[in-house]
Length: 171
Length: 256
Ligand SMILES: [Zn+2]
Image (cartoon, rainbow over all chains, first blue to last red; front, side, top):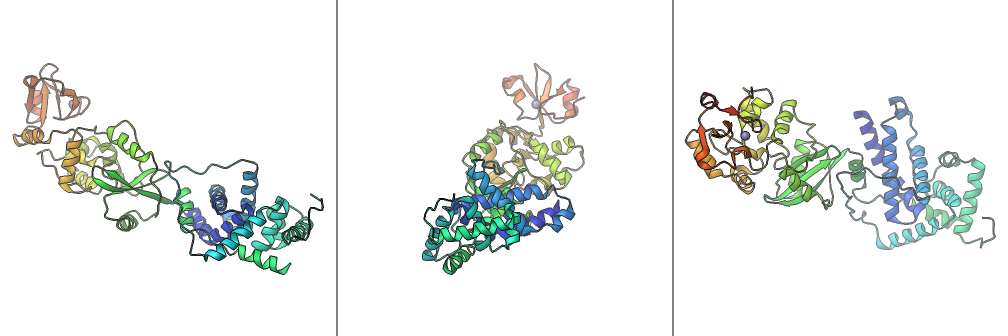
């Protein structure tokens, strides 16, 4: 148990930015991004404490967390919000983010909102490949799809983002 | 295509908001949350986690409280907005109408036993240190009881202020010295002046003539009795000799 807690602490510190960025790119706003990231880590924690030590050690953390996060977002879309652990009714205090340049922040938010408007299958593929910079194999693993499908979806998603296609009706 | 990809890469460089990791760890039960509350004692900093309330301290500042917590408890600590209903819960706890849970993990089994026993003392009543010692099965460990109470990490919530010396001296109070202890007891309805007069005269117990039961002077059992119906005893032997038996509620002596 002690060991698992240390692993989890490390996991959160190492991957918090990555998973928050993923949440932002998939949901398009910072509030949902934080919820997604928080849910992702809590689900990871609940799974970790049930895993035998070997499994914890051999875990490919990055791919594993991406897989959980994608599922968290998918479940939210379906309206199944996982409940967070209640701490005697505590609410997280929302502090301001790190000193990000206001202009840059606005640009980022605008881009995130645009990405979030993509149909889910293109959005997931584009975000994992080009925001998170996973390999095609890792993306395929996280999404549970064949590599070929992922490649096609990434290609199509990028085209949509660049405004190259205008409702040519393949969705 | 290239600019879009560069933009997307920048999206991946976004940082999690300040305090995010701490909040996650608190949610997972690996850090304690804390908030500041206004009480009759003034501002009290209160920490809690999934197991319950873990610390309470009158501190001059959040920084002072955090430093104390890190030294004494050693876990991560995350400041949160005070839950709206916690002040009410605390009040109910002190009234005895609610049992908050407490996280006493870091303490010795002896200290835990002392604090859990202290929770049984009703509001408006006091018990001597020796009573705690006897009730937890270590009748000779009166001093150790005093030490455990002085180091109570959750004063006020765990009412160590309700434990006083049998000679009527109010004694130490980790929650802010003897004066604070007197103030809380008075607020809780303890008649300190009367208690100390009795103690000065060497009286430890009071009995009710009609019931032949003897109590600690603050026990509610004897409260409705008329003054002329009340007798006082220096010792339990004296009470027994007069034909009195110990009260089952305040247990001034081992109930036979
Ligand atoms: Zn009694």
